[in-house]
Image (cartoon, rainbow, N blue to C red; front, top):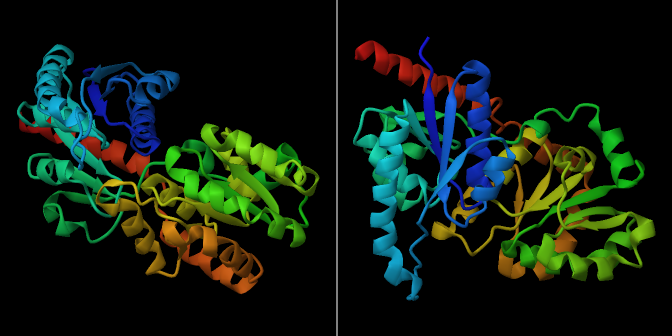
Length: 372
């Protein structure tokens, strides 16, 4: 059997990087001899995260087009030309059988070049509302793997495959992890636990809202596992100093997210596509506060896809400081509402998405080889 070569392109955020790595890992299980090359954007987080996952990556000089007038927009046409040239060189040198795009600045030029040659091409669209690049590319690629139904509004119907979003392997099975999680965080089992997933510049509103809730959490015997991100960590540490003995904890980053999910009774999070896919799989009642700072207001659309199924509660970013505390207490003390939210969100989960996508990639390669 001939060795396969596959390029995966995407990045800018963990929401684009984690799916790409998960798909590569799944293909590697099915075809261990496959050679992979990741293509990212120079200076973005994928240039660090992908090598840490054990894969080789090269970078393109590319960034997004700012919607407001900025100096960086003057360089945008030159970045596009440069990236298309480099993508073409990468393609011709590596000679991939397939190119998979998971979103982010680099996937556009790489997929655009790949569609002009004989490689199999596949888009993995995480959001319920696709960006303009994927809408344009959808007319040229072989397959579009999506996480939400109803995407034929944006993509050719015959190319769509409903797969869900690939997520981190460790959260796929939480069975038996609650006790280990309680031990890891030093929490007790007879008090409710809130998990807050902040962690980037876009999570400042969530972090500032949680500050106003600390006293209420203590009074109501509620424990807190709070991921703040590096930028807010010192502020959070000062704020929780008097509450630490009460199980109110802050971390700049939680490495064992499976343990954090396992102990949580309720989760407060942004509404990024991958976060939502994880919440569906772990079946946790959640309050979603969509970030207002993302293109096409993706996060509100992602959140509403759950809210319409009574599978999550949404609070607008502008109203979070005023409403979050009361909403958390209302939900966490209502066992029937928690049960309903948990049941409904679990019903929207997709199992084994990475493996489904991996099999589809290999099937498309096989069909192309037979045809040729």
